[in-house]
Image 1 (cartoon, rainbow, N blue to C red):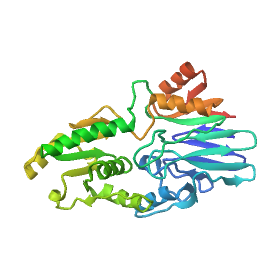
Image 2: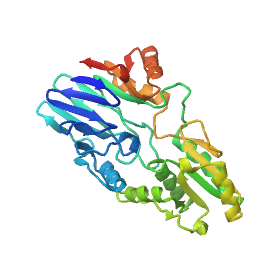
Image 3: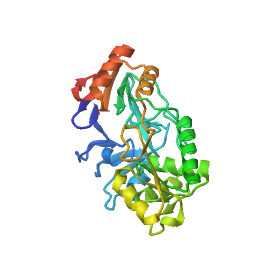
Image 4: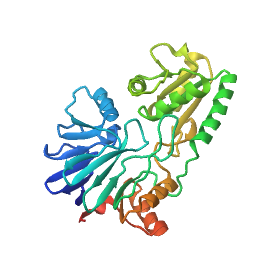
Length: 327
């Protein structure tokens, strides 16, 4: 296999060229493998595009003009691209339908993680490592400063705070990413507080797709009905102090705002430090089990994390931008 990187990672095996989460249209002869449906990993292209049925469902709903030529993959079921070249989609634990891809030939194997999370959430099982010769690993939180508490402890802490907010008759806003995090927030509110929250249109659209894929989330579309619930779930990007003040004037209630993210910012709200990515130690633990000959880091703190892999694990690692080698 020949590995290469421009603004996305690619492999070539014999006459096949395979791109991962490409950000621009390429030759129709090149295959595209999509790890998940977040738009920063997606290009709307007519190439043959391999993805899980859940990822396909999310993308078909998002794009009004859909050019995708989808090939549906099932988790843990090998797909033979050639007689001696197979690929298997594995659960990535990031959002609904997210996948890692394991490529195998007679002589070598490669695991591409995409965005992934090894910890279980209320909606998803965590990703499980598999042994591979080469590992292309997401390093979004690839610095030692990033540490995330166990989900159960985060849920317990948030539950106590929201119960106190409700006792004080406050209106609660919970903000996360519209696809992935907000569905987890809705599930948390449903399960632990028996609350059906209001949600914005984008969160509503994605949540309906979650429900069509064996989930049972309860939510209400926000549409001039702010008094229908004491809780609003909304996009992280819209959270700010001006919104909080404006809403307080509108509903004559104190607002208790929360932001749920792995990053160290709160946008004027209370930070709940939880992520759909691995933290630093979880990344190292994952690499240890995969036990690769070589690691390439992609996305985020690529150079820092490659250095940490070399130093802490003694495994040869480089950032993917340095990659243009024949293996």
